[in-house]
Image (cartoon, rainbow, N blue to C red; front, side):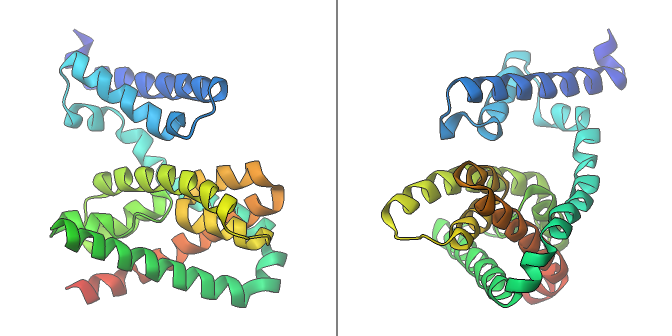
Length: 232
């Protein structure tokens, strides 16, 4: 059977991932609920498929390794929103810098505190620290500080989905009228999922959320070696 050949798992699991993601997007467009976003629905469908086929996570991971490799080029593509919003960054750089540093420090501190409360230690704790970054940045930081990048990707998805849902609720209760503040809330608290949600609120909010997402990732990737030394 081709399943026993190296190309078999690659074709099967890659096709399954892409097809289920397309299905999840269709479902999300039909029923617009936060828990039906492709980031939550696709993994759930993949887990159901793996259970049905009695496949392990190792089987799946080896089959989609080439998809994971695309995260590298995707990181380079984040330079585009930085270039497009260069005027905004130059005009508001003091506020953006303070917000990015404060937001990153708060995210990592609360992640460390949450790990302590839950009794998590070792690689599990280190994998939780970069949860408030977009996946390409978070997996890079996780590997640099001794965490498990695959596990970090899971934490990133959970943070993004719940962060976007909570951010929407907060905007209904808090008097946040500034487009910059609304965009920064989603970009910092819910990374890529938050950017998508911010674009639904307004174009300026979406642009700011995208800039915050990229700046947070860049700052943390550059600071990861220092963080690794501090953790040791």
